Length: 409
Image (cartoon, rainbow, N blue to C red; front, side):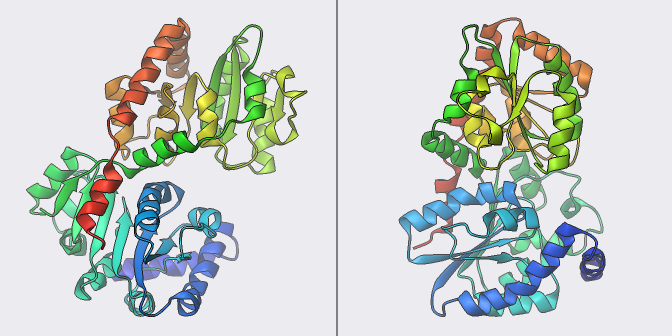
């Protein structure tokens, strides 16, 4: 059934690719994978193959890549993505020796890929469970590791009649999980090659904070004779924007920075039309004009993780869609983080709520209530922010634990 499902999925993606940009990029990119491997793989070199679905998983893989390249430069990095949104942004990532798409998980593709790549070890990130790739690597005695994983009882590994999925977890050389609950669940199903290390993204956001450079335009924007609360909305989608923009419009004691998840022109125009106060795009801002506005829309990529340093309160989008985006890159700056209700797959959301540094909202009313509570006093904002920051800095170190167990030498 699994192989049939994969074949049908691949067929569907190819079928819609002429009409769907993302599918078209995936088909085109996968077509190039074997050519890239033939041209770039250097025989005799030791390749650490790291696979991430998209950008979020890449951020979890990045500390591992940086540690390997910094401390063990004799290894080469082969970085694969499944999603175009990851590959297109990171295809020129300088610390990877080779970057390409992971082809569909058919037996033929798997055989060709492994014959060309000949990885020394394989590292899959979080939720990337491809049976044929994992099984064939196991048969070829290629050590396979899963990092920053989170497991829940409803996943197919733990169902009756689970078939190949039930066997897959036994093929990993070692599984690194984010929490004790995941370890206990695996051990209850006789999967014992498990270590709790936490989330490697925490190491990443701690590094970003250390390396972050000032943003003069944003510093000028927040300067004022009468300081206002700075609200930063990161990776927002329209359902998020409908909630926080209404609140912003009616609260002149706030300034707002919005970094939408998608920055196409139509989306930017829709945001601008909803905002009833002076608003400017970052690309059109200068040191002379930015202070005359109450809202800045970030219409470029790469600034958000540093932008949070200037905030008093953060809102992270995605929680009214497929799932929240990166809470950690906001929390590391010591500010409270608000997010939507779809966070079941994100351990850090539960942890931030538990520690008092994060807050989930269900709708506009609950957002308004949460914001009113925080804005009653600057002390409540600071207290929640300190709890968010303390959570981050007490949970670092996952990367080194993983490297030590993998034992690259």
